[in-house]
Image (tube, each protein chain N blue to C red):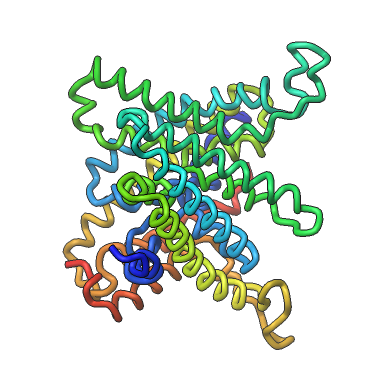
Length: 204
Length: 201
């Protein structure tokens, strides 16, 4: 039951885009049509789902204050949490590189459709942001962190596909010249964010 | 390009947020108060400036295939330094917990990576330093403008001091995250209405 509530909460209430604005750069740059938005969204779900539990384990057994106690009691007072940025980003960058190589080798058709977006994911704030928020949330086990990762990924995916669909339609509407393109997209995302706020009152 | 242009372009004509649309994530989240915006702007300026400088020094020695990882390591190191400095002055200058997450996110801030890729890898160290600092300042400019409006109308204060008259009822919409997006949309609107070259077809 807790897993379900965490899952729904991370999709709607703590939505990566509308509540925290994470991954905004690629969100605005790649949402011009639904097809590419779909590809990037799926890639983000996948990378988030794989790296966040890994980072959770790193945090739990290496970085937290006293986390090294399992190695030897002498290390119980060591606090390595200042290293978390560099370790998290190293895991993410290495993982994206790995995924890129595997996909290139075994799934060439998927690679050509995702191609340029895969390496971009390493610098997507939503991925690193997920890990940094995970650090603050004190999850009790890997399962919870994996559910949180899946939920946030799906939330991000929904947001980018929605925006891409709206922008496709918006191409036909009469927008004031200076507002065209990026300006109106910002305002659209703002309005979508307001709509998503109806989920805020939900307690699960 | 002349040094003066390198410095002035990112402030208005090539502003990282309103024109290049880089580094928007943090720009929206930290602008509830002016203080948060200024801390964030300074941190980003330091990291972009020094990151550009260091990678420009290293630019001839980095193999092309692994450059993203090298960039990330250098930037992550700078961000850790900034984070540790902020933590060490926390007693006299407290910052809230939410902000510290966004300080960590400077690593993946597109401005930092974008300027390194677009400028530092092809230019000498000193112009790169100037370019990085100017982009940080251009980013900070928008942050301060957004935060000014949000703090003034959302809490009736500036830097935590009451400015609005005593009977002012705070506008809670302004505090909500989506409003920052709408505000930046309007800034872009105004900017492009003045500068017709930037308008999209």
